[in-house]
Image (cartoon, rainbow, N blue to C red; front, side, top):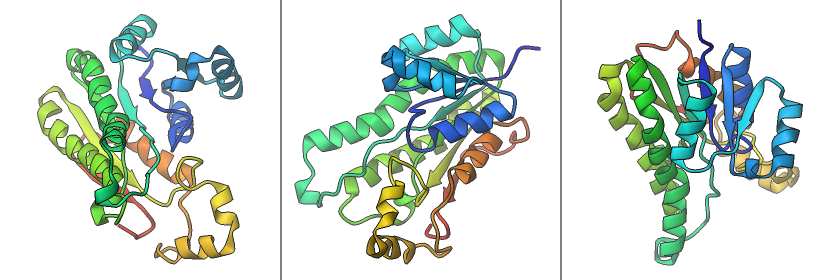
Amino acid sequence: MAPRVALVTDVLHFVGTSSALALANDGFTVLCHDAAFEDQKVREVFQDEHPALAPIAAQSPAELHDAVMSLHGHIDAIVNNDAYPAHKASIEDITAELLTETMTRLVHNAVLRTGALVPLMKSQGSGKIIFVTSAAPLRGLPNYSAYVAARGAANALTVSLAQELARWNIQVNALAPNFIESPTYFPASLMEDEKVRERILSRIPLRRLGKQSEAANIVAFLASDGCGFMTGHIIPLAGGWA
């Protein structure tokens, strides 16, 4: 029986590494994709630290498709773990450049990447697609409209693709986190300032940040064989904030 294969994108950021490890622990061969892997040294360090994972340096959607085909010939799960900073800007200060880059990093890349790999899932009659997005669109964040709009687009993409791909037994869901410990959005250094820490925790009903493992466990479940009748869902993970 061929090994189950998962792809995790932007693996060095957000909840990428923790999700890749959770999938590896569940028996997946995990292809790890990140722009930093253009640097051979970074790729070697990552593989040395996490020997169960397989970093790949392909950049374009076509290159990614070819790499997956060359390595395994199939793919069972795609985890679009796209991360980009939430830049603060009032609506009148949002530039075309900021909006374009935010949409490119959080929506455009995921659409084209997924589109390149979905034919493999269609041909095998099964697959799991997971978008790691944000809970921000579920409540809104004043002065972060460019970021919220992009994350909202990814959530909408999830719902639409779930209906489009259901006939091929492909399930599409999104994990929508906020207030998760990560170097991308909530690094440890941010919580060292007592006033900043209290301001952040005061907004979270559970009064703590979420753990990487808590996000990764949900990603692993969504990619598992046990999650076959769940599709088109946006799952908040925000300590009660959303």
